[in-house]
Image (cartoon, rainbow over all chains, first blue to last red):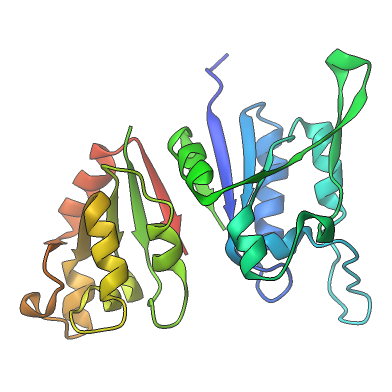
Length: 135
Length: 102
């Protein structure tokens, strides 16, 4: 089997105004099937993709925000959210959906997938990747 | 283990260049392409951001995209280097990864 590579999906766009966020999620789901080491980063307006309580009914859009909660089952368990991007938008982590995964090594204990990181930490995470895909 | 960052949006319309510059590590390179080259011109409000990028690494602008927009080599912020398409390929090959700031 080919060696595992580190893939980072860099999400910088708000969810419903353009197709980027939905397309990113589609590619993450496809990529998950190839058993790579996958991380997601949310920065700039990308942090709005994880807002709790999104209701797209009246707007007539697809509400794909719930899909993020299912990614843990596809071994996508690293969501890096940039602290500065949240602060610039008047948001805190409390405004985001809780996203967890079940750790099969610890009796399926629920653990948080979201990790708050500073801008400098995110720069280091980017530098640690084999492939970075931007949306 | 350096990174090539491409920026293809005007710094006067989007924050792609500012966000990119905020995530640079020493030795990284920034390549302005498409409307991103609008940030390469001297005298604008984007100069400080480009100068910050020049402090951590190299900054390039794609010559055909500059030419198409009437940006002359003499108009470039000091330190910004022009590359052609072959130079773009060389930059990709010289770095371990490429990050697109859209």
